[in-house]
Length: 232
Image (tube, rainbow, N blue to C red; front, side, top):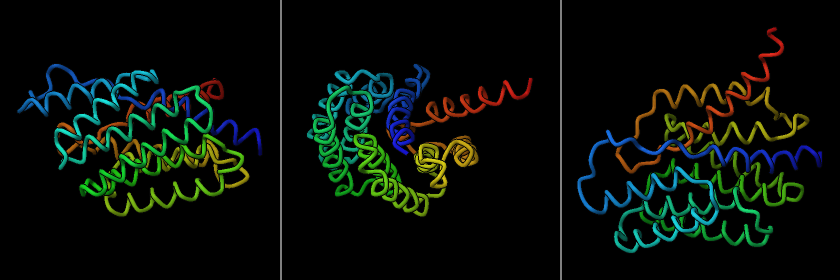
């Protein structure tokens, strides 16, 4: 049990390193104004780094963007995301990670007050719960695994087409010990379902959430690699 929960924390950190998709190409539609241009560049920076210090710097940029556009929920959303990924990548102690997650949840609460996309906000909340679990898996597994499942279910209900909700839910099953109904075998069809959702998904705007596909591809490659020896 202890070994399985420790593996959950380490694997979550590993997956976070794959969480960022490739930065947008130069062929993307040109931003319509300075704010959109700055946000586009900042999001691209966020999605292309796993360095904890760089993630902190991006979170600070998004704080300034939120001050410049106080009615826009997206800077607060991405600020929360940057702080979350920082926790997965950081070597800080548990107390420091919890404080960073407190900051992430505060930013997420601001995004919710601004009436952001609730399915995306709930998915990010579920991801933050996974990070809380990873800080202390032995003590937090029962509480936070249930909270992840609850938030993911709500996110799917609000938007059944949101692929990130399926990805986060599959991660939760994947890193749950097999004795409790989890593990890679149980998660594989959930990752495949997430893959289908990503294939059909198209973001509704240039700044809207579009992360997670590279993380999913990494997970599916691991499944393929595990099956390869058996096929020989």
